[in-house]
Length: 74
Image (cartoon, rainbow, N blue to C red; front, side, top):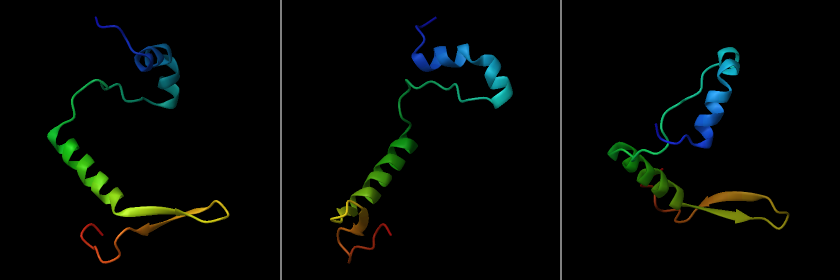
């Protein structure tokens, strides 16, 4: 058996609590991304790059399009 990571040890230690509060996902975190997930990640990154975060003098932030004419991902 491979050495358990911290999340797996936590899941094993809290087994009885999960019976009360509900199950948690026990899937492996050390797997390769699927082609579909890689495609979705690239799409999300492209969507993120089209916006720019500006900061007001009072410290609050707001988001504006980098290029207002580009409507490809909106």
